[in-house]
Image 1: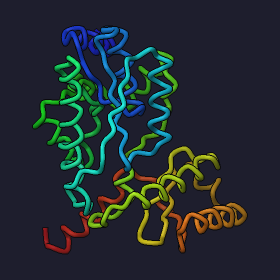
Image 2: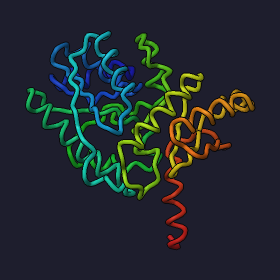
Image 3: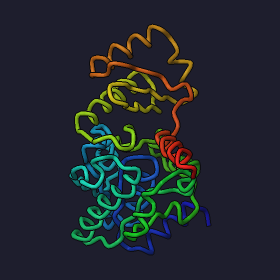
Length: 271
């Protein structure tokens, strides 16, 4: 049995399901397959919080509408436990967020919640996976051994517009651990990343270190960026957003680059 059929069988066995739906490539595949199998017995739940870009929530709404999926938006604040952006922020945040998703799902008659963790996600530092396990969240892509490349392949096979969508993560990941979280910082980072996307850089991160912005784009796009006129354009735009200094990470975009801070800390402690 191929993996798409196994995924369909997974949802058929559940009978009803709520999908934590960000609009990314993984959760979109889950949402569409669940809805095709279970119809109105599948619910997509999208969290709207200060650390999630507005454009991402808008895209999730449009995707759900286009696919005819039952869709709820869950408005949440920044959890008190992560206001200082601790090293275990992902665990603490997922405990809070998915606890809220579970309560919302149960209140609407959906007893099982699934998320888009795939078979590759255990390769990086992801303390949030522990929170999902503690709450009983199911991760069918991981459970069925479906990798990111396979998610993209299946999405393309199904004609989903997200098949080649770059990976995104919440805006908490743009700030160093230990930084006090402020909504103004989220809006500043979001505006800077939207500006870069409008220039044609799809896989982009703008990391914020005080009044310094560090731009990361995928390595394939670095040559496109290396032009003085474009440098001047970006620097002017970022200064207009409140950044005093703008830098480019010559290593290119890397998922979890902020985790280097944790590795340095471990070395400093002799671990």
